[in-house]
Image (cartoon, rainbow, N blue to C red):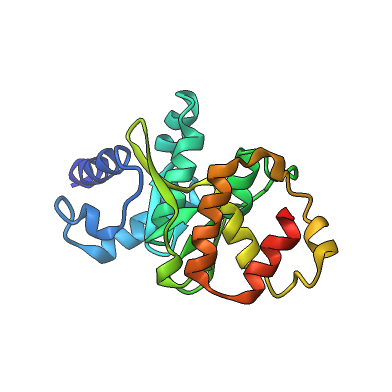
Length: 215
């Protein structure tokens, strides 16, 4: 009986260790008892063998350790940030810094979604999701990094999003200057793309912010 119990656990964990993330439903093909899975997940989380990404979603510590050893951990974090709230794309501070448009190193993952604003905090980091109108949920590219598919804003859309979510705080040219944005890293095509989002958004305020920033 004890060997049967041990074999049952090994089957579950062996499958889980191969997955970048999983829920109870992902393991139902080999374990039909959800109550048993909940107890097992709770026990293994306390033992630090499982990491709880959010309610009902997990990854094994072994999977994370393997990503760190193969230098694919940063790609995994970007990938999982898209998964925690779907659909979403990386943008704002996180992307601006990667293009050297923002000098201050972001400590959190910043994303844009069409769902309500939310924050997920777990052992891997803190993930912020900002809600945008569906018509402005655009301006991102799909990247394939190893086995991971990642959605990231273009540098121009990241800048637009950054200003869009701060537009009520930007009251004059001085407040825009205080953002310390490296706009010299933008070319004519970038400005053309930015104007496209301005027209889509349609507010006088965003057009005024554009003038303060670029004129």
